[in-house]
Amino acid sequence: MQGNQASPIGVFDSGVGGLAVLREIRRLMPREAVLYIADSGFAPYGDRPAEWIEARSIALVSHLVACGAKAVVIACNTATGVSATTLRERFALPIIAMEPAVKLAAASTKSGVIGVLATTRTLASPNYESLRARFAVGIEVLSQPCPGLANRVEAGDLGGPETRALIASYVVPLLEKGIDTLVLGCTHYSFITAEIQAIAGPGIQLIDPAAAVARQVQRRLGDAGLLTPDATDARAAAPDLFLTSGETGHVRTVIEKLWSHSSRTEAMPILEFPPPVRVTSSNAK
Ligand code: DGL
Image 1 (cartoon, rainbow, N blue to C red):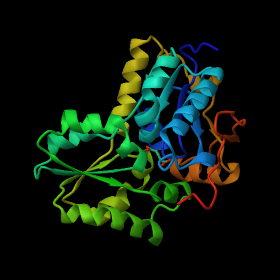
Image 2: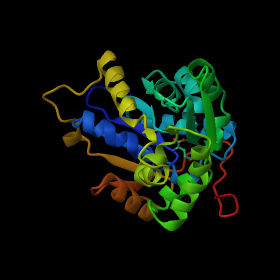
Image 3: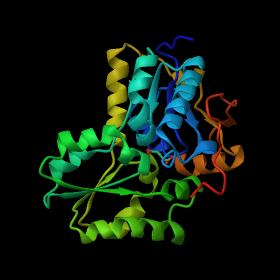
Image 4: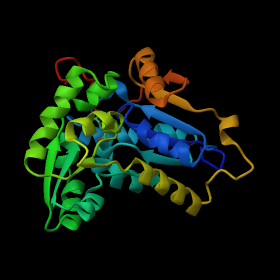
């Protein structure tokens, strides 16, 4: 189905983290309808092989397109790192992606040492390597993988002792090495910004690209003639819809906590893709 101006913006993430981007999209474009996929049944992506994430991303974008999305936002640094190029080759609609804000951090650091918190897969991606090579010349970049941290947000535990201990274990070593700027390179971390700042201290600048991504969405829709016209409220015709592969009741509760109002959260149809491996307690962190 071909999207038009009144169609929803499709957004996906491995789970609820992409709501941080959606929040900024909503702030900037309040009349746009949105269709969000929280692939929580398969989170975290960050510890999975690149080929798996790419296959899964193709399946999710195919579903968003079939639902009539007019554009797709990859609200996930991990999926962007391994699949943005393929998705843009395969699909004709505008695809807006995101990546750790290394460029901005490198431009604003005074100490010349920046930290990047992200998933293991993001930091191992060629995309990230290229970001560093292009934008962080002469800057020391401390890349910190954070296994388990996105899961705390998926669990809805934003400020509990386990979450705080995990944050400290990742952030304190960076502070000891002299960072003054810290990039939030995973959308899930936006929801624990206050906890990260509390541990990092007021002198450390946190950089979250969510608002910049929303501005990019607005620009791309404008360029493609796909913005909802001023007189139209696309949300009246198509209320926000959240689809999830996770346990619907739990994901709905977490979405409502992060999204701050009630949501229409429904189970997503099972999407076929190779290999259909679910996260189990033995391989989840
Ligand atoms: N929210 C995702 C990101 O921006 C990934 C979290 C995960 O599933 O590992 O990278």
